[in-house]
Amino acid sequence: MSDPAGYESAEQLREYLLFHYGTRTEVLPWDFGPEGGLDFPVRCVDALVDKSSIDPSSRSLDVGCAVGRSAFELARYAGSVLGIDFSQSFVDAGNALVREGQLSYEIVETGLLQHSATARVPEDIDRTKVSFAQGDACHLDEALGRFEVVSAFNLLCRLPRPDAFLSKLPSLVSPGGQLVITTPNTWLETFTAKAFWIGGTPETGEPLEALRTHLEPDFVLEVVRDLPFLIREHKRKYQWSVAQATRWRRV
Image (cartoon, rainbow, N blue to C red; front, side):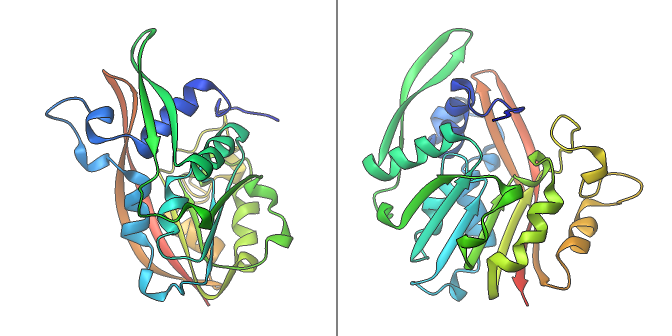
């Protein structure tokens, strides 16, 4: 299995467990810094998902779920949530969190210096509603069926064929259901050949408008927001980015 982003590495697993489950002081051990970028998977659900239209018995699908925090947050509202990720390492971590509610990992301080931490699923979330499976967003199985909520948080610009993923969405989202997408639009040929970028070139134009051409008329755009996020690499090095966040309603 090709892994150009290194998502099967122990380093990436540690970073994403911290990104999804780290406390404020674990992620940002300073009394200054961009606090607005913390708890990104939680804020994606809080800021984008229309909770009022989710039936408690409904199904949700979180594609590119990484180590699962957004899938667990969706379980606050949906009857069941399936998280799919290309990384088996991430999926294994998610399923361990379903079983145990917590998972130990290491936080890098600097160089080879680390300290132990524990990722925890909030106790008020019913973990039995959530399951994780390895899968390819560009080749999703039609047997998955339909979902009332489909989410893809920071996935698009890491896919080799984002157009293949987008073309599957009309058959995955139930009529009246919602699709929520975030992307920092970090298009790189390491992951996606330029011919398949969703915007960001003179030919395809601004990313939101390019995304609109792929989703309309099957979806109607309801919400557009800018959501910052902060990823800690070690105590003195961070990635601060701003995701383009949208919610779409299936016609």
